[in-house]
Length: 364
Image (cartoon, rainbow, N blue to C red; front, side, top):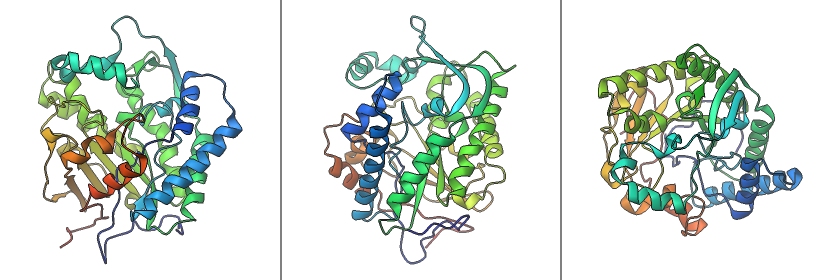
């Protein structure tokens, strides 16, 4: 693949281009290094760098081999989770043990309704939020070296395959270090704005490297489960509208046709009984100044095939349909029993309509 800075996003002019959400299952050797990094334990950094480079090359090759057109690095370079990796790339945060019963990860309507199920799930799967994250100083972007490693590994791997283009998924401002606490800024909104300002550097660097950037914003939809009740749907939509304003500010000055925006209801294999209506988060999110906006329903309760809906400024809200078969393989955690190759193939099979870059009117 040849990258061109600020090139137009590839469009499905001759056929429908296939893509996926971004995160793929890390191989065991890489998971061992990431676990040590997350725990702050010593590890061989040179060996980790080589393992990461080889793992990215392999997952890129596998995506190309099964015929995907627009592919990712699998998010292999991110520690902790897709939303908490910025703890390694942002200055101004401190991590502390939770007080008893103070882990927000264990809260929410779904967890209250199905406490026994989630107790078993948490005992078997990794709980991603294990420490409190507190803003104790000005938020600055410090992740240039780590991001540069991800970009270099991905571009090197892309040069060895024939695909349309590549994208790097990163957290949208509202999904960066969710459930964080604020001890520095005058208000939580000021902290949110500072995060958006800092993450702009990450978004810009990816685009400047000739890649697409995808803003992952599961928090935009999942927050409904945490907010309602006791708050109302109106409160939730007001909160979400503000998050979109912050996101638009964070991508100001960047070419919109190099940005993807992904919203989903969360990736954990739970009941998801308390999610908002599938279009509740889509309405405000459709004002995000990105080119394609993908709203993904991932559970049988949210399973649907939605029609293309026009949205402002020549963009589309295009809900995605998923089969029940692909629910767990698509989002399974690293310990999944599903073979690595089968997981990727199931992902490809689950998206026959896949992704097109859009402008002005829906394709025929």
